[in-house]
Amino acid sequence: MSEKKYVIAMDQGTTSSRAILFNKKGEIMSVVQREFPQIFPKPGWVEHDPMDIWSSQMGVTMEAMQRIDADPEDIAAIGITNQRETTVVWDAKTGRPVYNAIVWQCRRTSGMIDKLKADGLAQTVQKKTGLIPDAYFSASKIAWILENVPGVRERAERGELRFGTVDSWIIWNLTDGKVHATDRTNASRTMLFNIHTLDWDEEILSYFNIPRSMLPKVLPSSKLFGSTSKFGGNIPIAGAAGDQQAALFGQCGFEAGSVKSTYGTGGFMLMNTGADAILSKQGLLTTIAASAGEEVQYAFEGSVFIAGAAIQWLRDEMRMLKTSPQSEEYCRAVPDSNGIYIVPAFSGMGAPYWQQYARGTIVGITRGVSKDNFIRATVESLAYQTNDLLAAMTDEAELELQSLKVDGGASANDFLMQFQSDISNITIMRPKCIETTALGAAYLAGLAVGYWKDLDEIRENWQCGREFTPGIEPERRKKLLRGWKRAVQCAIFWAKEEENDDD
Ligand code: ADP
Image (cartoon, rainbow, N blue to C red; front, side, top):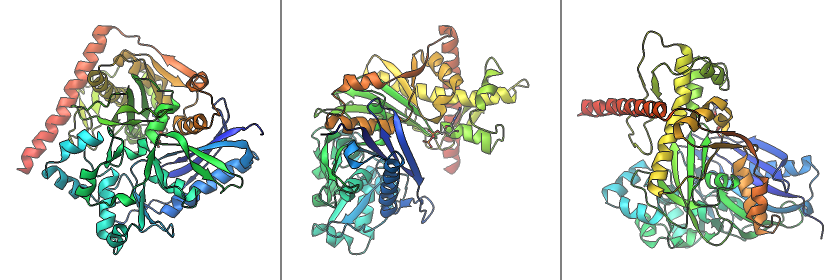
C-alpha cells in the first residue's frame, strides 16, 4: 500500500467553503476557498441554499487536490468542520432539501424561544443540553420548517425526511445517502441532545414536536463515518467537529484546563473541562469538546459579540484607520489610554453580564485625550472582554489555567496580545499556524485512520510562533481592571435607564 501523503480538511464556514490539504507535520500543502451566496429573505432572517453549500465544498476540495496533483490514493482521510447549528432538512429518497438551510444567525424563531422560557423549560433545557435556550440552536429552526413548509410535517411523520447540521448534510452527500450521521460536538449545538446520556432527548423532541426518525446517528468526533467515492477511489470520512471545537482541538487543547481564545469579528473562548460537564451560573454554555477517543470531554464556551468588529468600526465608521493592523502603531504611540475606557457593547453584552440592551459607552474623556488614546482604548477593550470570560471560566471550572492559546485575525496584533497577557496575568501562546479550525478537523480524521499515531505526535506539530508574558505591576493591573468594571457598569446603567423610559 502506498504511503498516504495528506489529510483533507473540509472547512464549511458561514460565508465561504474551504478545503485544505495538510501533510503529516500539519503544514498547509494546498488551500482553496470560495464564497457562496447569503440569502436574506426578511430582516433578521438568514438562509443558505444547501446545494450551494454542497457544490462549493465539492468544488474547492477538487481544486485543492488538483493544484498539487493529489490522487485519491494520496489521501488518508477527510475531516469536516463546519458552521454550527445551521439546519438542513431533506428528503431521504431524493436527497432534495425541503427548504433552504436556516443559518445560525437567523432570528426568525425568537418567539418560540420566548415561549419555551414562558413555559418554564429554560432550566431543564440547560441541564440536559448545556445550552441557554436561544434561537441560534437548531431545535427551533427544525420546528419552524416542520410547521411552516407545506406538506413537510406529514412527510416527517411518515419517516421520509432527514435533519442534519452542515456536517451531516455533507457526509450524506459524500456517501450518496448511505450515511446519516453527525458528531457529538455538532449534536451538542442542536439543543436536542442530552450531553450527559449522549442521546437525543425525548422530552425536548416532544416539546418541539420533532420525530426522532429525522435525526442522525451520533458518533464520536474522531471516528470512521463512512467513505466517499466522489473523488475517484475510496476515501474514508473519519472526523467531524463544529468549528469552535475543531479549533480547540487544532490548538492541542486536549486536557482539562486548556483554553483557546479566538479574536475574529466576534470572539470565542473555549475551555476544556475534561470529563466534567459543569453547568454555569454566569451564563457560559456547556458543550461537548472534540476528543480523540470514545470518551466524552466537555467544554465551557463563551463569546464576545464585538471583538475585531470594534476595529472595523474605527476603520469604517470613525474613519480613524485605513487598515485594521494599523491600529497597532497608534496603540504604541502612547503609554496608555489616558484614563478612557471604551466598552463596545454595540449589540448588548454577553457572558458574564448578559445585558442585551447595554450599548457602547466611552468614559473618562478629558481635554488631553487623543486619537491614539481612543484607538488604544478600543483595542484594549478586546482584551478586557476576553479577560471577563476567562475569569468567569476559571472561577466556575475551578481549574488552574495551563495556557491561553490564541488565534483569529486580530491575534496578529502584538500590542493586543501583550496587553492581554498583562491584564490577565497569563502567558499567551500564539501558534505559527493560525488555521486551527481546519487543522483540528484534519487531526480528528487523521487520528481515526492512523495517519497520526497518537496525540503526542500531534503535539509535536504545534509550534509556538510567539509567546507573551505578563510585564506590569500587580497594582497597575488591579487599577486598570477596576476602571474597566466601572466602565461596564456605566454601559449597563445606560441600558437600565432606557428600560425605565419604556415603562
Ligand atoms: P472572521 O473569521 O470572524 O471573519 P478573522 O479571524 O478573519 O475574522 O479576523 C478578522 C477581524 O480581525 C476583523 O474584524 C479585523 O478588524 C480584525 N483584525 C485583523 N487584523 C488585525 C490587527 N492586526 N489588529 C486588530 N484587529 C485586526
